[in-house]
Image (tube, rainbow, N blue to C red; front, top):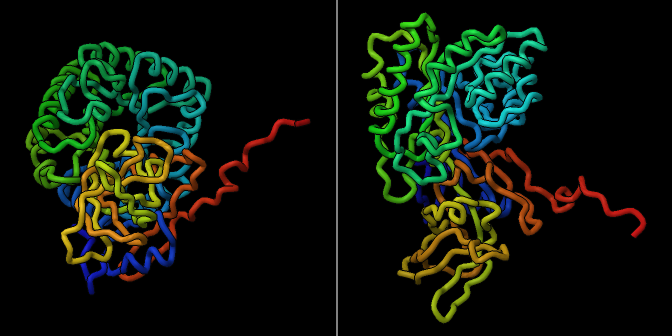
Length: 416
């Protein structure tokens, strides 16, 4: 769903006026739609109706506790990539028995925490990790449930920074090594094989790469089961894209039906790990124009949000639509929308035609994924507040940081 609408010439998210949100919580501020988050999750859940499945939210996209709590209440599991993310799941009331632990660099301490909590599965990404996990589980007197993340060498046709399924990627084990490593895992006393995992990248906008990757995974499934290595689940990862500008990702049901067509006759539980597709278009970044600056070659709208608040434009040259919260009739001018951070790369949008005045509010759209989660304190800037809207109501789900919080753990040098 699109939670945004223009009412009385003010942009609203659900039934909440963004002018009021800005006046109440100040800017910059992330704002999320409860209804959009719920409907995005339910689209995946309903598409898999009648099939044993678990939707594990890839929480690196946005790990706010209220968002985790909402998804947990809807029956979600979680895809984590650190011990810290596991602790967030627990703090939000999530079930550790629905957690899969991905990532190429799991430490022994993180493994111990996950084993103590009783997670569903470790997605193992190297032979060295397989050996370490067996050793850690053995010292604890436990059995670690595992799948191997298999790299199918399929081109996801996405930005190279978020493409994870090619041979040159740091992620997963090579397809040609997988059978040998499953045999090794089956021989290790403190591991129990549960499934197979595959994730080829993020922001995919067509079904073909998913289907190609699944074909390669299923050849391994058949080879394993021919050797008596029976898998309980097939984890198809995530990566379904959203619309930022002119992308046309397939509807969730179309994407899932393309996968289910290849899984007919197989009784495995299906795991999916959507992240961006659940939260991306459910959130926006609210920012205010501090200055209008007319240059010799370009016009600049200097806003109070910056690359530390939303890293994607600077990191990926990513596009986010930018719209006025209170639109005017005029055609406006073309602006570079930039922040106050002391970097030429601090931009939020290039060449945007806007009718602007100092003090205007802007909404940077499709910012629910990899916005707040990638934010930083660069230039000693406090991170933004986060707000959840449900109907007409708004709820502060993360307070704006105070500057003194940013150096509370630092110490001056004694004697100077």
